[in-house]
Structure formats: structure tokens, C-alpha cells
Length: 159
Image (cartoon, rainbow, N blue to C red; front, side):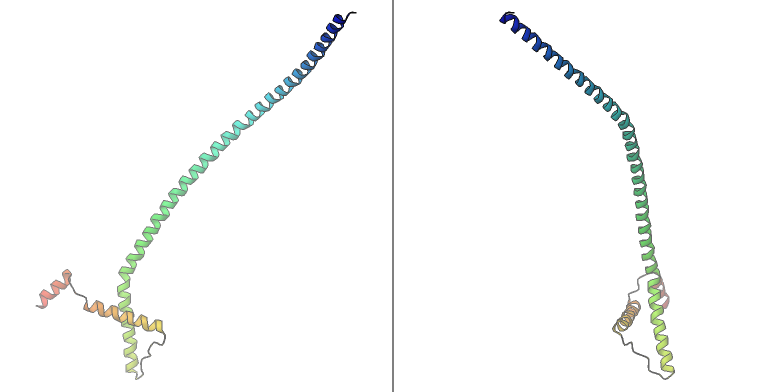
């Protein structure tokens, strides 16, 4: 065997080993690609229902938020109505209640004078301030200018 034949034989063996190694690598690569394809298909099969469920959950949450918005609007309307009712009741009953309180205080004072006792003077600052406020309100009500229709008719009748 000559050196050229020996070199040719070594090159042929080298190429055979190289092709064999490449064939093994390609076989393993094909297995990995098959497993990756199976994994991708499994993920796709599971992801589609998850995305569908997520979409349904988002739609349900949106519906609940719309209901909460409606409830909030109704509560705001109810609060506005309660505020209006409160101010109406205060305007309607506030004046007469002050007059009743002042009248009842006057009656107690008159009864105490007739019985010979001295009417008790409120000892606490809060009571004195409340009494002073009631008296000022009565004086303002009594001295307030009357410009309504009934007061004009009364003045015209009285002359």
C-alpha cells in the first residue's frame, strides 16, 4: 500500500465517521423538534380555552362594573334627594320649632313667677347661648319687614 492509498483510506474513514456523527446529531435534532412540536400543540390546545375563559371573565367583570356604576348613580340620586328633603324639613319645621321653644321657655318663666319662685337662670354657657339665640331669632322674626301679599292685604284692611 502506498502513501497515497493510505491517505485516501484515512480520508474515507474520516468522512465515514463524520457522516455517522452528523447522522446521529440529525436524528437527535429530529427527536427534539418532534417533542417541541408536540409541546407547542399541547400549549396551543390549553391556551385557547384559557384565553376564552379569560375573555369571559373580562366581560363578566365589565358587566359587574356597569352595575356598580348604576348603583353609584342611584346612591348619588338618593343622597341628593335626602339632602333636599333634609333642607325642606329644616326650612319647614325650623322656624316653628324655634317659636315653640321660645314660647315654652316663656310659659315656664311665667309659671315660675306666678308660683312665687325665681326662674332659674341657665348656668351653663351652652344653655345661655342657646337662649340668647332663640331670643334673637324671635326678635328678628317680630321686626322683620313684611312685604308679602298677606301683609299688604292686612295693612290695607287696617288702614
